[in-house]
Length: 70
Image 1: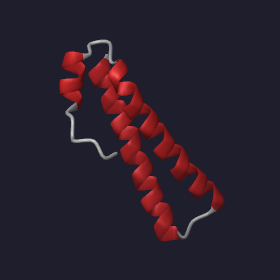
Image 2: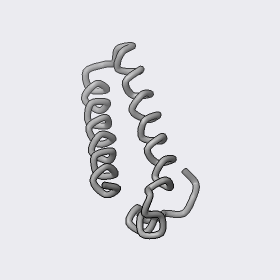
Image 3: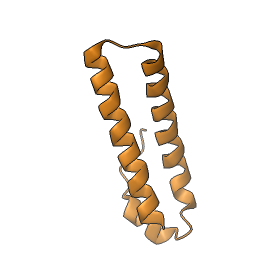
Image 4: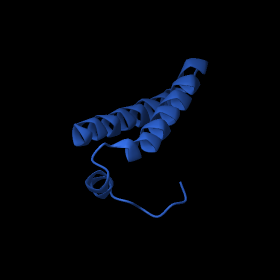
């Protein structure tokens, strides 16, 4: 993502339907799927810990988007 930082709150204010959040949701989904694929292939214990933490952060971001857009 090379774009300038844009606040999700600003996006929602200018786009009440939330369609502007779709690319963010897709990015989060792609990141989660990539991490999950790597986990399924097998990781060293420290890498697995990092992967689990990363997935938890992605899922938290998805949860925040859901709450903001509802």
